[in-house]
Image (cartoon, rainbow, N blue to C red; front, side):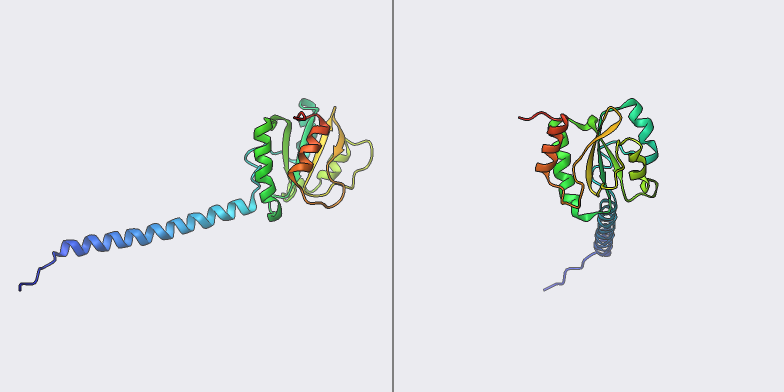
Length: 169
């Protein structure tokens, strides 16, 4: 029986396919790790809601005297699941224009509570992270949490109903 001779060209094609596959696997793994790191360090809502810096608050309130501020740290892993649900709630109730986001983990927002006190009748040192702050007519009207508590969809919905941002169905 005669042995079949495999052309050298076939080995070359196999080598190129193998190298291409290995390159693609490493590229996809790198891309996955990069995107995972990005979402770990950034809030889900940071690209969805308008993001303010604490020093921009006073000028923003001139144009928008009634807003709800979502104040949270983008680096807080424990609220990522809540933020996904909160984003869906915002889309369902179509209240994106009524909310802004302030990232507590950014250096420029360190003095947010001091800036917020300019718009409050009483000194506020009870602002915890994460939190929702309702500002009406340029004044702090309501704060969701005044002590450390876990954010949940039910409390946020009730808070937004009390503020008149969403209607009770």
